Amino acid sequence: MPKNKRTEWQVGDPAISVVSDQFCNPYTMDLMVKRKVQNLSKDHYQVFDPSGNLLLQIDGQAFGFNRKRVMRDPAGFTILTMRQKGITLKNKWEVHGGESKEKEDLLFTAQQSLAVSLKTSLDVFLAENNNVKKSKTCDFHASGGYSNISFKIFKSDALIAGVGVTHKFTWGSFCKGKYNFRVRVNPEVDYAFIIALLVMVDDNENWC
Image (tube, rainbow, N blue to C red; front, side, top):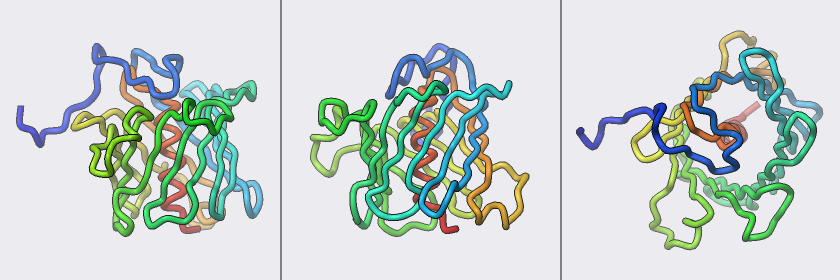
């Protein structure tokens, strides 16, 4: 198979569990993510399955530096915490399990591939890959474009998930922070991990 040919993660491929095995399903998942700014400093994401069942919710700071976001299950139990790391040329996040800040609870880090880019470009490193030299190869990569806030997530050359903004919105509602994402997660891929990346990319690209 040519090296530049990208494939898709399919049924039968090994599970990609970053947050927890409980978020890996043996079938393709189509999710709806609703985002709404609650006030000048906070916003709220809700993740639903096709039947309208709430799966995940994310709260946190919509603007500012050193932002923190917390992902919870429908009952309010904390799954993970995302923290933006200060002012850097490349937007960087650290993600820990639960509410922890401890090194042993680190799940992954993510940062923009380039300080300045005309398209989405995010490199993701699993916890065990964070002590390697700066020339290290990322474990996952998200790429897409700024024009429609849509992107795809890859493990090596295999597509594991795709994200896009739904087209049923007005520019007025969009700039007020009210818009929806459609997310397709391939079989055996951790959807909580994918949603965390979505929130980071949305933060990086949100100009309204």
